[in-house]
Image 1 (cartoon, protein in one colour):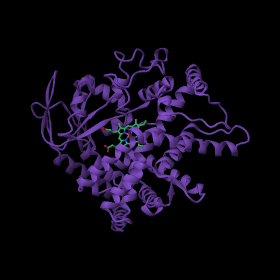
Image 2 (spheres, helix red, strand yellow; image 1 turned 135 degrees about the vertical axis):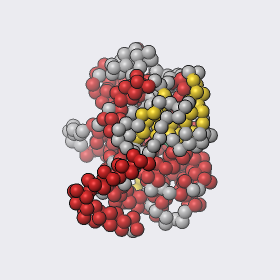
Image 3 (cartoon, protein in one colour; image 1 turned 120 degrees about the horizontal axis):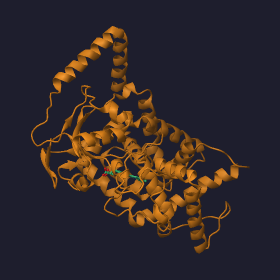
Image 4 (tube, helix red, strand yellow; image 1 turned 135 degrees about the horizontal axis):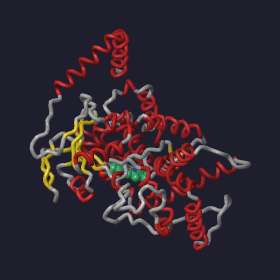
Length: 440
Ligand code: HEM
């Protein structure tokens, strides 16, 4: 309520300022930001690129074409440099042999501090920053995404996939056409949601389709939401987020049937630290739901897109699946249920390679950590200092286009030599650092 009031007051006063007033206010703000930010490069620090825009720094150039801009900076300044981006100083480390400096240094370079800030901005979860015990206990729940629990999740996902497709097929009398992205997002969203949170008891298809549409509208504005733009300036995102959070309240989710272990264990932890009715519980569920579909939807989209563009690749993937079905005594067709174990799925090398290639070609992933104390990162090529409060990041897309690693990086699906797996455990792992992919 207080938030809504201040937003309304803010809008009122801006309108009354008029155009000349706004221009003057913007000029004064820029001047204040220039005066406040007097940072210069200190000895031992990487090159500093502040751009010409106070506070925003190089944000516009990076947004326009991230890959080319990063390559230009690499040519000019080498593999390590610091840029000003939306009020934050980020040191990029582009040499893949130095990635471990960022990923393995959990004590001084924190994922948690970075992600907790993001969780507050994006999902309005405020307690994680203060309550370390709850944070630890929620992280322990990730064990239910591994091992035996993952087998159970997979089993339930297969059942849900079958039901979603079967109900579509029963309704359809001839071929339907759909756009690829809405098709992928609708399938992945429904299957993931029902696998984690269960099915709505009352036969109410509207619940899931409305939730999906709201979720996609929310996700569409995600990049703006996590930047420092006030949510009040982002159209109706705030009210959509509130609606989704209400939909994921303890009361509503208690009515679902077939909830997963990972959901149940998270709900138990949340109910230990919040009262049952607290809407922040729904905000936690929104965060987890986002993590579970934000990467899988674009991954499915791009994998299908490249397969459709390359009939020879599509034929190899189909043939591999047909052979697996044959060897496990299963038949194709809408009347025949298909059941595959995790081991059998793991044996689909052509399919897995297609997904890795789709990730290589389409991901603009950035892995970011928060610097907890002033420190010196030591690499073979030299030491460099980073400051407390800054961010450190790696940007693997540069590697994904490197001809020293991929024979023909510009060619689609051509790096799958004889359909042998590009092994995910190799020293230059192409996929494990993907964060958010771009589908349009
Ligand atoms: C193509 C599929 C996926 C990709 C490429 C992917 C990638 C990633 C990456 C790169 C991170 C950040 C790690 C870091 O910076 O160290 C992450 C975090 C996370 N992902 Fe995924 N992910 C995928 C699917 C999923 C799914 C299906 C789920 C849940 C069912 C999930 C749940 C999470 C969670 C909960 C986190 C936060 C972990 C934490 O707080 O420590 N992801 N993911």
